[in-house]
Image (cartoon, rainbow, N blue to C red; front, side, top):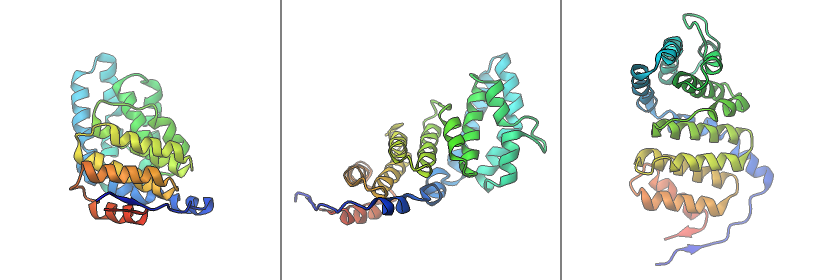
Length: 235
């Protein structure tokens, strides 16, 4: 049977702001840090890079190692204010913080990783402009980590109320590796939820339907059906 679509009244602008407010806080734990296993992919990535680095890069890997150890620990135990400050600026066993490493070793794998860690730390400390600055300097061929980075950029832009940029990055997160069923379905659901929360009904419907059709066994299947019904789309 053809789908029946009902026109949904536009959401008032002040209501949109309220619904989008705190999107990072709502989705950070279930989507960005889905258990330690996802982020600890960084560990294998770090190990590989450390073994193949050239002499200059080897030095940068030695310098960044203490900060990476603390960062990996934070992904499992939580991002406390004190630990964030140490990772960013050094101290308490961390000789050099990632801010200095990102600057001093720009263009090296360690400098690239420093940008990722700085962006994540600033996101957790709610300094969203700086989170954007550092995350936009980061890139990797490790698709799960790149998906996380794009998702965090979306979160930072969402908190800055730059909704178009936020949605663009949520959709980028969903497009990094469409063969990765878990990461892609989670990112699609997040993008769809954000589109709905900001009154972008048409895009929300398209994203929900894509998640439903391409990943029918995804963890949010029942929520997607309810969301589509709420938006006027029925089987």
